[in-house]
Amino acid sequence: MYGNDFSAPNGAQDETPGGLLGEVEAAEAELRAAAARGRRGGPAPDEDLAAYFAEVVDAEQKIEPRDWMPDAYRRTLIRQIAQHAHSEIIGMQPEGNWISRAPSLKRKAILLAKVQDEAGHGLYLYAAAETLGISRDELVQLLLDGRQKYSSIFNYPTLSWADVGAIGWLVDGAAIVNQVPLCRCSYGPYARAMIRVCKEESFHQRQGYEILHTLAHGTPAQHAMAQDAVDRWWYPSLAMFGPPDGDSTHSAQSMAWKIKRFSNDDLRQRFVDMCVQQAEILGLRIPDADLRWNDERQAYDYTQPDYDELMRVISGDGPCNRERIANRRAAHADGAWVREAAVAYAAKRAGQKETVAA
Ligand code: FAQ
Image (cartoon, rainbow, N blue to C red; front, side, top):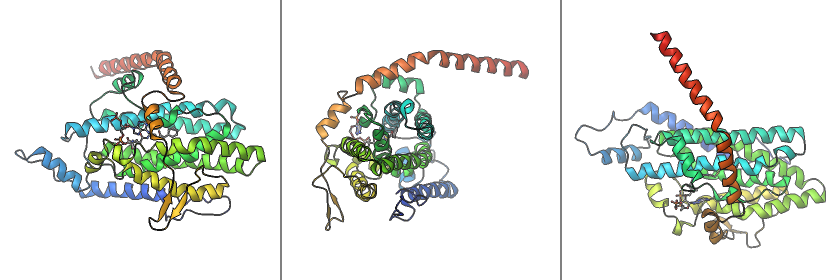
């Protein structure tokens, strides 16, 4: 399991010292060490800005909002961070669907807190994107107009309570595997936001795992419901890591800039390898007849997700794309009065301060 603070009910522990949470802590320590080391005070007046940018990135220091950066680096970050922020916000819908139908008060309270956390993650990420010179209003509009994407995974329906468990175990699990390396991203505000997000995400993953464990050890009908959820969420979760490396348009450049630290396929493999042991503890089957340990590669061979389906979902033709965007547009329109009230209140407060100052 993630972290070293959780043992599965049968006592099995994560094999990795500190697990993925340990990696988040290491990334946080690295961030502090880099800040303490400090950077050369900025480029000399006649220095090539691109060379200075490359020096900072190579030295594992962070690029900060006021630093010069290549336009393409800025654009890539805006695309990726915004897509990530939109995913957190749209990602509230599939689980939000179950808040009113959670099987107990405890489950309802936990799910409510988790869905609220996703909203918080969206806010950290929009704030990080804003440091790149684009406003949250613009970003939200780009999402609503369909000009920016959100993760493919949130276009699948949640059909049973077990889906909430499968989202926690698989979707949050994949999200963590993908996001832990982003804690070491070269852009400071994104790296710092990711550290906070990952710490919370590990709790999310555990709550899903625990739901599935309870169901898998319950009645035969509950076990079947848990297995059905895993059967439906497994391949879409593998697809979250993006197209295979050969078709990934951004990976090479993003890795050179140290935005991404690992390729899509490397992270997907890491996720599969982790899930196998966890599925055994759960007593659930990963729906892949060709899943087997490859001694030579020291990794599991597995069946790839359907990448044509991924492309269809990304381009707007998944099972729930239209519903998700329609809901978001409606929520945005319904919330207009709140935004207007907040702006009016801020203006009033600013006016009061000016009067006092005068
Ligand atoms: N869905 O060249 P690449 C969460 C697009 S977790 C949609 O490989 P890149 C937590 C890609 O943008 C989910 N689009 O791209 C949670 C690009 O588009 P373009 C969010 C996808 O960026 C849990 C094109 O395909 N996590 O929210 C997907 O180098 C539970 C080519 O792909 C993040 O966003 C996809 N799955 O690598 C919340 C993590 N895959 O340029 C609620 C940060 C690819 O044609 C409940 N993002 N595309 O417009 C990343 O790490 C990267 O952006 C990747 C894609 C790895 C997703």
